[in-house]
Length: 422
Ligand SMILES: [Zn+2]
Image 1 (spheres, protein in one colour):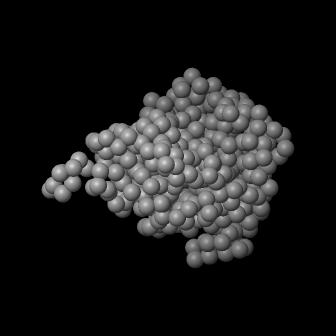
Image 2 (cartoon, protein in one colour):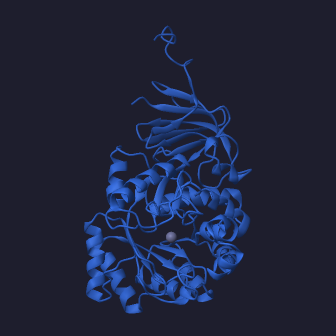
Image 3 (cartoon, protein in one colour):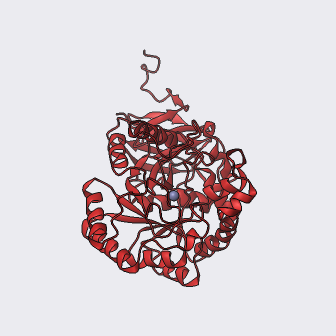
């Protein structure tokens, strides 16, 4: 593979710093040089692509991905339960759609199937299927049938300590990177559900210990304050929602801010409040499902987390008919409009901070980072909402290879006498 140079770009490097004019050089899958202003990178042997002043930024990271939730912007599917053959294929389709919309990495917040995501991750990594880098999860595990927890969350739920430990070690053997537990139920499942705890302190501790022994990460759905606290004490790494966090829960999250990530997932609540009428969820139903009050609470809690330096990342539970996969970039705009993030903070959360969540060298334009990149027509710092329009993504690169490319290639730098060859 020839080296690639992107030139004449306005670069957002992922850190939150202002755009700067520059160019970068990529060799194989890696960014090897970044030049600022009138400095240049080595062009020897490279294919040169002229960004014509467009923005060059890291590919985005979806911090709360549900690729097995069936609905996408290309296809509404009014059920969560499909025959397994169809479900696997729909999931692969959703992976491609996620990448089409600028997300080159996805951290799973749980699946509807124990083995789908590890298999999908491996197919993507091997280059057989288009999709984001994936941190693969097992089931979104919870007490099916309790407090409205619907089918697909584990009909053979073994609440014994031995059963939980076994589930954790089996998930590791199955190839999962992370396991998702419902530490609390949810208002969306049943009114009052958010305050219902699904795992005791003893169970949470056993899950945490087994995960450390197996070498697997833990993620959880945690609404009630006590659910958040149990997750922190048990060593969970990704803690989702945190809508009802009290001061003590915030203190605890702040104390472990170097090892914990929060993704509140405003996208789903926003959709239930504002965009789900056609799907039978009007204002009354949105209120009954806790979406209206939940969004108001998040607008208090998330800015408090931001102030405390807790890493809060975009990722909004996309995959429902009214909140489909492919709409993921809307979360960045919600972070700005609802939570008081600056546009560059929201962008940094979706890129450099997302790379920390993935625990991979992604999310920054910087030497030795993987070449997961977007070229964007326009300035996302001026208006982060433009990222929701995939036609603005004129190039999408993952691992040094184009998934999409509408950028003009320079021929002027070919060796003299060969410029017109072929
Ligand atoms: Zn979720």
